[in-house]
Each structure stands twice: as C-alpha cells, then as structure tokens.
Image 1 (cartoon, one colour):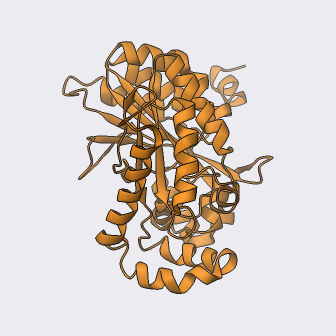
Image 2 (image 1 turned 30 degrees about the vertical axis):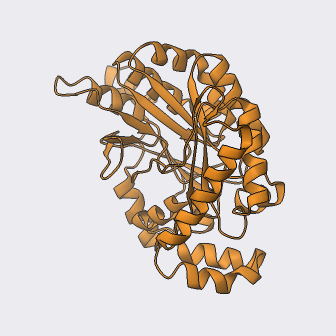
Length: 336
C-alpha cells in the first residue's frame, strides 16, 4: 500500500473553529449551527474553539493581563457582567450564556508561546476575569491547571477569581507559584444566605463549600481571601445578611475580604430586570430608580461600603480577619 494511501486511513482531525468562525456560524444559523458542540450531563453544550492569542490586555485595572480559559459559564449567575460579551458571538445574554460554553482547547499552548517571548515582562495575569476558570467542565479539560503550570514555570505572578471549590485540586501548583513569582486566590462569596444563593447563583457550589476551600488554601500556605461581590441591592445588602456572611468568612480564616455593589451594563441589564420581574417583582421599581445608569449612584455605593466596614470593625474589634488585613475594595475584571 502506498504511503499516501496509508496516511488517508488516519486523516488529521479537523481543527476547532476560531471565535470568528463561531460568530459567523451563529449569525447565519443560530446556536444550533454548531454541530460539533457536545451536550453533557449538565445539559450544557460545549464547543471546542482555537484561539490565536491567550492573554487579553486589561485597561483601568490593577493588573495588566487577563486570561480566560472558557467563554460562557454554567454557574449561570443572574448578575454576571460577562453575559454582555456573548453579543460578540451573535448570542444572547440569557440561556445562551450558561448553556453554550466555548472551550479554548489550545489556550495552554498559546499562553506558553506568549510568556516564552524575550519581550515578556512577567507582568501580573488575572485568571478568570470574565467567566469562571473552575466551572465544572474544568474537571475534564484541565485547561486552567495547565495554564497555571505555564505561568508558574515562566515565573509570572497571577491571581485567580472563582466560585469553584475545585481550585483546591491545584494546591500543588499554587504552592509552587507562591514560592516563586507569587499568586493570590479570590473566592467569590457574595452572601451565605441560602435563598439568595439559590436564586442568584443557581449553578454554583454552596457558599459553605467555597469558604471551606478558602480555609484549605490558606492552610496550604496560599494567599486566599473572599470577594463579597457583587452585593445585590435589596437581596444581599441588609445588615443582617452582611453580618452573617462576614462572620462565616472570618470563621473560614480568610486573609482578606473585599466588597462592592452590582453594576448592570447594557447586555446584562435587560436579563437581570427580567429575573427581578420573575423572582423579586417588588424590587423592580426601586431598581429602575437606582440603576438609571449602569452603576448605582456613588452615594448609595458609599453607604453600602460604609455599612460593610462598620460590621467588619464591630465583628472582632480589630481590622484583621484570619491574620490578614481586611478592607472594602473593587474586583478585578477585563474582557475575555
């Protein structure tokens, strides 16, 4: 048999489409035009994509670069600002965001090329600024873990934002990074109120599991804290709710805590208001007043942060939680 014929028996598998290809396919035929998207037991469809670059430059943030292994998120948080990015792919901000996930399968290789360049200055990389790097599919793909290994090997400092307790799987890599260029892990726990969690974050692990992960990370010598973000007006902003959450955070041994109020930009606002009309109709009128612009008025945000700070001060009579400074601050984010 000729060599050419032998090769035809094992043809090269077709490469995954680019995000530009995805946008064109969806524009012409809708989400069902993605026949290679694999439906899994969680009822979401997963579409492999190839990317030309791994890192996205961040503007106006305390970090220079963002890294997002996935696009879309099965955590399905109703308030998530990343919902607006689906419009770039001709998709909606509603169910499309949480039921059609794009898996950047070649991201570790693309990242290795970028941080391997002589020009790479080892500037801080924020992982998970747009969608969660530890959503359930990570357990199968390990894309996030492999990216962390690349960053660690290149002595690039990084931070992670996640609602996924799965982050403790990678304690070995995070410990190595901590001894090298450094890393921080931010677990997002806006509230420990069960009703708020179920309604606002239907696809996430329970807050108690996330706080347990914070304790495990700190015990392993990894700098880990909690982001109470976003605080959702009228749902998680009561003093009682904030106090209960901060008490749970302190018990978990978090080294730091930050808090900020939700913002509703175009592409997210309509989705969130529809959610309010279904689940919290009594709040709709107040939200129409509060969110005439994407961000709540500065005075309101200042009042919420002042309340959180006062609870922090009264909690233990000192300005530290779990052995590290605590404060009320903003959250890292950047486009995917």
